[in-house]
Structures are given as structure tokens and as C-alpha cells.
Image (tube, rainbow, N blue to C red):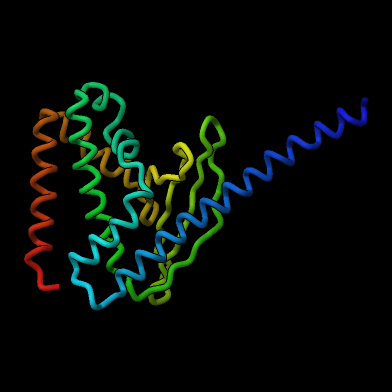
Length: 208
């Protein structure tokens, strides 16, 4: 009996460790595959800038939990005060804002190499969270782009980015918080919509 109990106690830690290894490998694969696909699109000289952006976002969009990232960026207080309709509109506009911003940053590095570190487990409570650091190697410099990942259902999703150590969630969150100190939530939505439309118009007017 003692032998069986010892065997059982030994089995469970190994099982948990195996799951963690599997999760780590899956997270690494998800991030690497998406980034490499986007880089391939951005290096395609047969595509216009708008086509590159649209194709890139088709790859990136399923990887990001925009509602979670938007909620975290907006903050608990502002999110709880918004109506469900306002939250939905904010999430849609935030997603468009983030996709445009992410594309503009990535397209600067289409001729560079990308390196990845192994995912680091940051938390295992409720849903495991990992951080994946990548480096864009450019003329001797190593530009850091990090991805915070969490499991949402059966999939791994990005809930924050870091570029050179600056969190997208915190950066946008600070801007939104400052704006909402002096303005109404609907004013924020209007400003976000105008900026998205302005960026898209600029891209559509560009030759490449």
C-alpha cells in the first residue's frame, strides 16, 4: 500500500510538469508561427501597403483577445461605468487602433531577423500566463518585442504587448485615463473613431 501511495504522489507532479512543458511548447509555436507569417507578408513586394496590412491583420487578429486587452487598458473603474453598448464599441475601436499601430511598428523591420526566447511561466493561477520575448535584430541592435499570453478556452491569446519594455496596455491605459478625467466616454469613442478613419484614409491614399 505504501508503495502504491508513493507511486501516486510521484505521478502527479510529473503530470503537472509535463502539462507545463506542453503549454510552453504550444505558446512558443503559436507566437513564432504568427510572427513569421506576418513577416513573410510584409516582405512581399507584390502587395500594396494596404494589402499587406489587411493580410497581416488576418493572421494577427485571431491571436489577440481584444476585449480582455481593451478592458485591462481601460481599467476597472472606467470599464464598469460604461454601458454594454459602449464597451462593445470601445472594444471594436480599440482593436482597430491596436491593429493599425502594431502594423506600423512591424513594417519597419521587414528586412531584419527575428529571434525568440523560450516562454516564461508568469502565473499558474486559474489560467496559466506566459511571457514570450522576441528580438528584432537590426544592424547590430536587438529590439525587444514581448508577448503576454493566457489561455482562453482552448486557445492561447495575447492580452498585452511590450515594445522595448513599454507595455501597450499601460501606455494606452494611461492615455485613456487622462482623457476620461476631463471628457465623457462617448467623446473618447468619437476621438478613437476619428483617428482610425484618418489612418485608414491616409493608407488608402498612399501609392504603396
